[in-house]
Length: 383
Image (cartoon, rainbow, N blue to C red):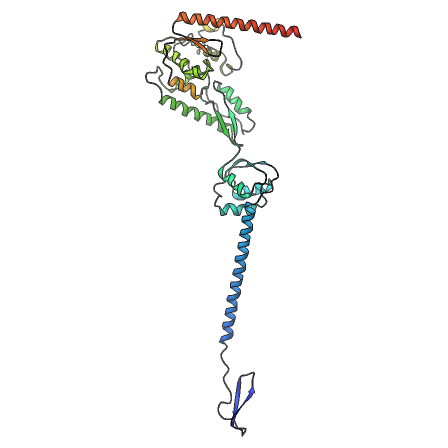
């Protein structure tokens, strides 16, 4: 009976004996290949890489989650704050400005959020108000939608260019000096809105463009047969209508009276034109009484009691209503009008009726002067 004696178990080979002590057959087996160990190492590397990727993915997801939560969470502002975002700033500079002003907690999370929402090209300049606790998401939306603070400048109708430029110069929000020199009638009286940092010249250019647009529209829509040769003549007459009445509903009728007089070759005989010829840009600073000598003065080129047709230029800056009134005047037989004491005018078709209206107006004036004198006397007595 044969038996197998393991000479070296660690080496994995044996010797077969027949009992006599002489071995036959295979004395030593061959060492098996080491493929299993190499495969085992490769799998371990793959497993490590996979684990690393999983860890990175989890970390990245956690970072994104934290960023999203932070981007939409309440911000650090404890009260409403206005912040100026200058023009031409990149996302990083905007983020740093907001962080410096205490609007956002982290400039990097804000930048990441802006990039994630692809809003980097939408952020606008201007002065913005951010409410207390505004999130970075809210801040981004305000900047992207351009919800900047808009300041206003209201220009009343009928002011001279000199008066309007003074309003522009005195506005505390506008920047720079006025370097433009627009002529009389070139500006449009309106309410203008602008953000902080807008220059005074920019607003003046806006006024000029607005007037050009309004005048072009009025001329294009004018009634047929008007005795006006070009848009400038329409503008000149509109400026006279503007200064003759402060009642919007009267403008078309006042314009109709002047159109009738032009059609008949009559002089316009408008008192405001005399005042502008005498005082220019300061004509409407304070009320002035026209003297008989001023009515008769032939050397005033704006004196429509002396010159034919229209004066050489506008006597004020006009609003859209005056332009439209001249472009579409009321059809009327009236050739005259005078103040009626109520802020409006009494209209007449004949000189006789007009003279009666003038007499009535002078009576009202005398009564007002007497009342004023009595009030002054009473005031001095009480002192």
